[in-house]
Length: 271
View 1 (tube, rainbow, N blue to C red):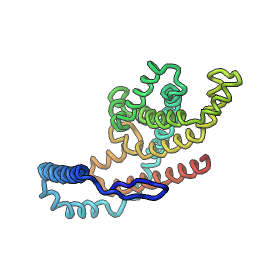
View 2 (cartoon, rainbow, N blue to C red; view 1 turned 120 degrees about the vertical axis):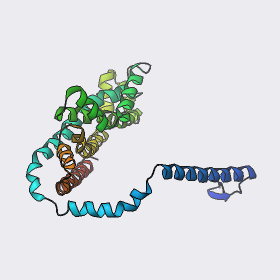
View 3 (cartoon, rainbow, N blue to C red; view 1 turned 60 degrees about the vertical axis):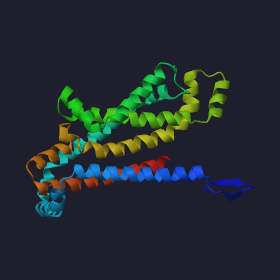
View 4 (spheres, helix red, strand yellow; view 1 turned 120 degrees about the horizontal axis):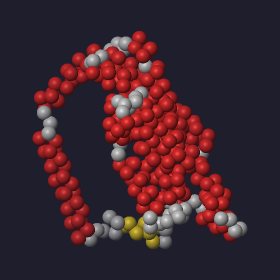
């Protein structure tokens, strides 16, 4: 039943017959969509494999345990490469995303008809393509290695940082902007003294949060040749060395947890 607030008190009202039929029609459509999705899933599923899944999982775990901890000696350098990919990619993404964000924000862009649509397009294009796809494209263009991974992380970060930052710019306190502009400050001086100080905490939090995400994403870029610990993961998968894969998964898990801890501490200190 819909609720109206009268004199700070909720007043319940009965649905009209049209509203009741609309609700029942919505539930009926939901049931039809559920049945249709179930049929589509059944057509695309080989249930014999599903029935055999517990046995296959048990067999895989028996081959993956115990972990081959001696393999750790070969993971230190790839792990360091992964951290460099995430860090340098984040920094490069920040350098590109900051001006893009100022061009995309309606209150700082010098051209709402030309530059703002271009900046918004860059942000949308960056966010639309996964970092793994960026890495695949860049490996094909510039070859395998860390550079492709760094650029893939950067291109993916532009959209994330740019979108959140330009929204923060548009939400600044306009009274401070008007006060600085009233002193006769130029456009750049107004941005420096009225806008930038307001968005610095948000900018720092966004950057650290994106670095935390990039740590996770950079661990798999090696699957397409973009360097990092993913190269070792792909090699172990190709050899079906499941005890080595267990070690790699453990290293990735510890790295992600550590980066999450650092990210949380930094954001708490800043914000």
